[in-house]
Image 1 (cartoon, rainbow, N blue to C red):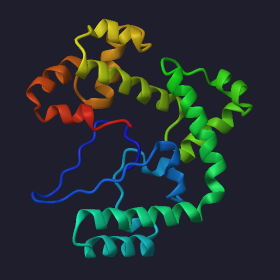
Image 2 (tube, helix red, strand yellow; image 1 turned 90 degrees about the horizontal axis):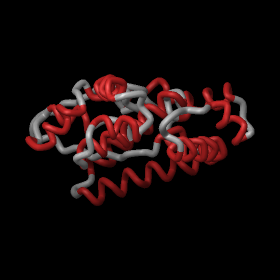
Image 3 (cartoon, rainbow, N blue to C red; image 1 turned 135 degrees about the vertical axis):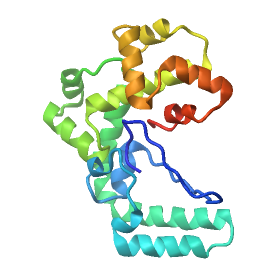
Image 4 (cartoon, rainbow, N blue to C red; image 1 turned 45 degrees about the vertical axis):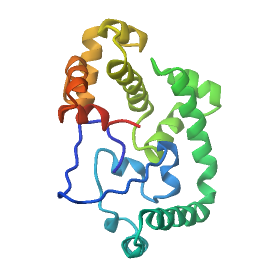
Amino acid sequence: MGHLTLPTRLSVAKGTSVLIARIYPHASTLFFSDPLSEFTNYATDMYDVALGENRDLYDQIMEKDDLLSKISALETYFLQKLKKNETRLKKVSIVQNLSQELFRHHQQLDLPFLARNSGLSERYIQKLYLSNIGISPAAFTSVVRFNKSLDLVLNTTESLTTIAYDNGYYDQAHFIKEFKKFTGITPSASRNSMLKNDTNLQHAVNIGF
């Protein structure tokens, strides 16, 4: 599953076991050769990516009898991919440093400042994000800001107005619009769903990083 910027839900058959490996956005390119933008807002069958390798991985995992053995097989696969793609580490480190800067100043994107501070051109930064994370720096900033606001909505009693201004939204209306774009429901609906733990809440919590 690529990076999500839209309300997304995957369904599986009853009784299915799910093993999830979550990769940092800036590190995904170490394990997949295709530009990450091709995976954004999509769930792609691994059989369609590096067919031979992934079929072998699937067979190895399914042959294991217990969860720890399955995890070990998955870790071995990722370590092999990491060793194979060591030449990409420099770009990954650059994206990681840029992302940390955006995390620190998540409220608004200042691309010219980011370019001056890193010694890179704005165009190159845009290209790095699309190929290594799958979304633009502006979209990345929006997701980071949303995640910070989501945590406050679900885990505090702060007013929506306070949350909006504290996270750099223009006003409460702007915050609600952006929140609904990511989740499909409003912040107040998410907060109410948290109390009932109903299915609508999944739209809010299964998004972002």
